[in-house]
Image (cartoon, rainbow, N blue to C red):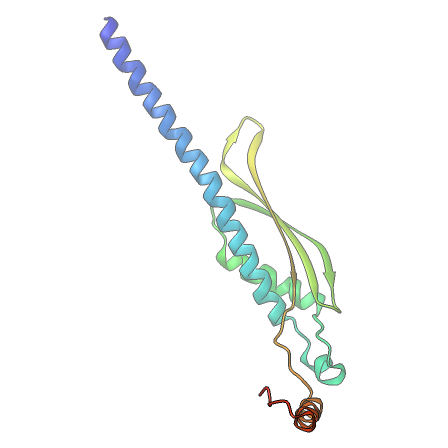
Length: 154
C-alpha cells in the first residue's frame, strides 16, 4: 500500500509540474508574440496613415489620427490569437511629428477564480525615414569641396 501511494504521488506531482511548465511557457511566449505583433502592426499602420499631400507641400511628415487608428485596429484584428482577450489603449497620437504610444493588455486563457494572468505590452513609435537631401545644396557642397581641393564624397 505504501509503494502504491508513493507511485500515485509521483505521478500527480509530475502532472502538476507539467501543467505549471505549460502555463509559464504560454505566458512567456505570449508576451513575446504580443510585442512583435504590436511593433509590426504599429509600424504598418503609421505607414498607411502618412499624409503625402502635406509632405509634398511642407516637406514634413504628418499622420492622420483617424486613419492610423482604423488601420491599426484592422491589422491587429486580422492577426490576433482567438484564445486571448485584448484591451487596446492609445495613449498619445501626435500628427506632427508623427509619434504614437500604444498599449495592449492581453488576458490568457488560464484564470484563477476572479483574476486572470494579464500581459501588458507598450510601445512608442515614430516615423523614421532616410535622409533625402536637397539636390541644389548637395551640388553646392560638391563645388565647394572642389574649390578646396577635397575629393568628392559621392
